[in-house]
Every structure is written in C-alpha cells, then in structure tokens.
Image 1: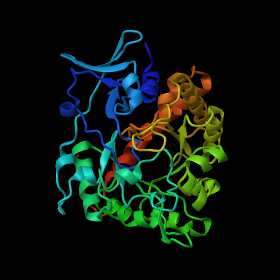
Image 2: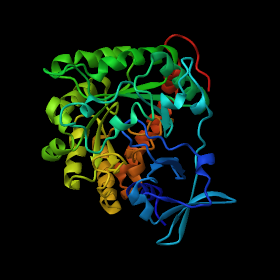
Image 3: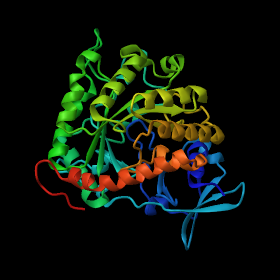
Image 4: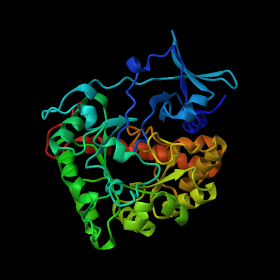
Length: 415
C-alpha cells in the first residue's frame, strides 16, 4: 500500500481514469478551467493520519487515460483502485458549493469570479496576461490563462463581485484564505513600461480586508526594485502573503519556457522581490513557486535551497501538461523522481525551521504541501523536534486566526 503522500504524488504524475460507476458530475465539484489551468482536474480528499490531503487530480489530459488508477463508486462511497496491485484507497469526493451557481448583484455567476482549489478561494483579478498578446506570443509554455480568462471566467473582475464571492466562500464553505493573482500588464507597448498587477490587486485587498476578513495572498509578476514601495503599500492594505512564480531554476530553461518573463523582468527580479517581501512579512509568509519535471531534479533541488535560504517556503508544482498549452503533449514527470524532490523539500524546510502547515484551515489541492512530504523521510530527533515546534505553533495560531477572520470594517464573519 502507498502512503497517502505517495498516492498523492502518483496521482499528480499519472492522473486517474473515472469508472462508469461514478457520478462525479452530480457528487463532486465541476472541473474548472480557470486562471493558468493548473486546477483543471477533479478535486479529491485523501484520508491521512495527520490531516486530510486535498488533491486536484488530472483526469481530462490524454496521459490520464493510460493511468493505472481508477476512481470507482460503490455503496460505501468512492475509492481509487490501483490496477497494478489491486489496492483500494477510500477517498472523498467533495461536493460542489451551492454558491458556485449563484449570481452576484451585477448578474455574474459566482464560479466565473472565483473557485475553491482545496479550501481556499482563488481569483484572477484582471484581464488575461498580456504575454499572450505581445508579438511572438511569449506566454509561458505550460500556461493557458489566455484561453481561460474571458472564456471560463470573467475577464475583468468587479470589486463588488469579488467581495460577494469571498463572503459566500467564507460563510458557506469556511474559506479563510483568498488568493488574488494576475498576469503581466504594461502601459506603453513600445517602451514595455510595466503597470504590474500589484496596483491592480490593491483595491481588492483593501475591500476584502475591510468587508470579508481572513488571510489574503497576492501573486503577480514582480515589480522593479525602484517600485518596491508597492509591496509596502499592499502590506499596509492587508496582504498577508506574497507568492512569486519563477517556475524554473536553470536560466536556459527559464528563458525557453517563460520567454515573456525573461524578456520583460528577468529571472533575478523574482529573487529580489522574494527576499524583500520575506524580510518585511517574516518567515513562512512568502512562497517561491516552481515547477518540477521539465528540468533536471538537481536544478529543482537548487531552487528549493535558494527559496528557503531567502526565508520563503517552496511551493513545488508537479508539471501538468494542460490541454491548450504549448506543452500539452509533454509527458508528466516520473513519480519516483517527484518523491525524491519532495523528500528533499521536507529536509530543506526542516533545516531552516520554516513554519509550514500551521494554518490547518488552508488546504491547497494544486500542490503537495511541505508538511505532507514528512512521510517520505525517516524520522530523526531533529525532525521530531521540528514537528513538535510546528504543533505548538498551530496551537498558538488559533487565536490569531480568529482575530484575522474578523473584517477590519467591524462586521463579524459567520460560518
């Protein structure tokens, strides 16, 4: 039998077939092709001794049709069957929130504004990333934002709509984290002078902090050092977390697969902004997001070290060849290589003592979270002491979470 985290990794790498016995259209969440497309799978919850593991499993990509894993339904519920071994793993298929089909006051279906990915609310706040519209279309090769924004979701979000959706996610799904992201934007096409997404996110951050409460994250292409005050302003507005998607450690791979980012900001800009915001917010409140699979795993390990040494925590996405992307025909990575990467990740966060997984109300279905990788590494005295520290921090965080949930405008949140 596979450990829960091993099953999680294998499902990310191999995908899953859905048996005719299943009624996931009725029982589960819809498959949402929003934002960059990473969440275009079926949401499942895997039982685990320490905490439930949320995972967005690839089911529509061609590689998933060859998967040894098969989702089946019986009188006792859903299970994932491994046809290689005959092992069965009970799983939960979380129901779709009723508010997905509600309309905002402006008449927009709420699922076109934001969707849950795990237990957090993800919202792409602006028009599609302009890398899709620049000459030669230098969009990231793995991304489908230009195909999804404006099709599966609204191309421009109204602050009022975002507030209504965030309140629905809070009150009816218990969400305590709203994640805002945007792509690349600029004012002058000739000069490529950036009007980065930070300023676009600011009014949303202020409104969520005032009217919704909870934790707020922002992800955008980094601004130049001369504009770092924008990070300060967003922190003052109520941002709790920044994430930076530099994707690949190897400079040649970065330039090849992220040509727009290489052209307009360059790889070093991501590290400069990551280090600056990590110093401002403190350990564990900034993340560096990388994709594992397209480059050698030694490069991915170097990326993990670079991120933790900057005081941030690594968010490692297992490469998914999403439909409609330039890399849709590239094979996903091998499970054994990814298990090696995540074992390395756990050792790295342990080495520097980063506070990971201390907010249990935030479960991310798109990646293997650092604390889930603990099962891949034999316990030592050091890891036991580290996990004891994390347990203490989780207990201490409870009153802080309760305080953060209260809207700054004074209206109490209900769940």
